[in-house]
Amino acid sequence: MKLHISLKTINCLVVALVLAMSSYAQQNPQYTQYMYNTMSINPGYTGSMGTLDAVLTYRDQWVGIDGAPVSQNFGIHSPLSNEKIGLGLNLQNDEIGPAQEMYADANFSYTLQVSSTLKLGLGLKAGAKIFNVDFSKGTFENPGGDPLNQNIDNKLTTALGAGAYLYSEKWYLGLSVPDFISNKYYDDIEESVAEEEIQYYLIGGYVFELSPSLKFKPAFLAKYVQNTPFVVDVSANFLIMDQFSLGASYRYEDSVSGLAGVNFMKGFFVGYSYDYTLTDLSDYNSGSHEIVLRYTIPQKNKKVNSPRYF
Image (cartoon, rainbow, N blue to C red; front, side, top):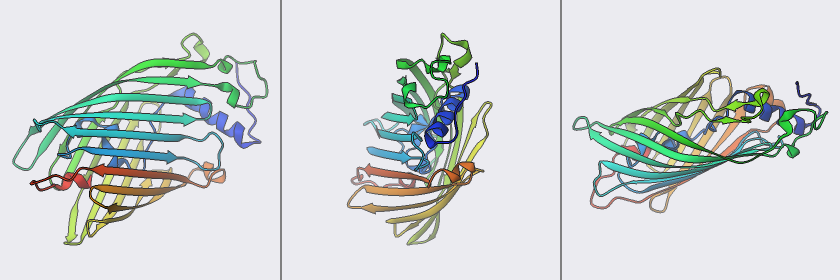
């Protein structure tokens, strides 16, 4: 049975977006400042900073569209006294239209010293997700005439992921699958089964020291999900006097972004990014905003190496 949705109002546009999401897959949000919350997609990163590191991210996407995606993420990780082992916790909340997904996962990594300058972090993550849908938040032309009107309350599923993170003082490269488990929703209604497809992430970055007071930090993120467009995100940031960050990024056929950040006090960083939409949705929204707040405990009696730049 086909659900007829009016596109004359913004609310109906949002319902169309949510139904599209349910028909194909529930996917993780795509953060513009992905280089600051790497553990959320790659558990191999856990503990790689050599000290306790905590990151809080807030993303408000497609501002101006009612029910557009809003995400919050909090991650905290640290190496143990045995510096080869890292432990971390990641919490996330995603909302889009009538759907909300909350999840928490524990991260574990073991670091191998590949050479005198190269390390490899091998990580695992495991956790649980709670999924809710309240279709009363949508506007339908034929309410009650389609099985998609049935709500979902506190659907609990599990998650299991893995990742490898190779890094030195100048560069990093990571490959990960945040969740190997394909969870299904609407199990009792064949017409409306939504399945979370497996996602593959490849990330990388380099730090060029142009002068004692200027560093250039290009980075990229590529994501592959079956039956969805390939996502490629490239960014270029300049770090000035080890205090101010300024740069831009481009997501293929999706958006262009401006990024800025500042280090303040001892160990604190705040970053902001603005995305301008390049798709047809640009007619309905005024862009996306993202804020990052990070705290890294300064290391004592030890040189902090360049992974802190990632």
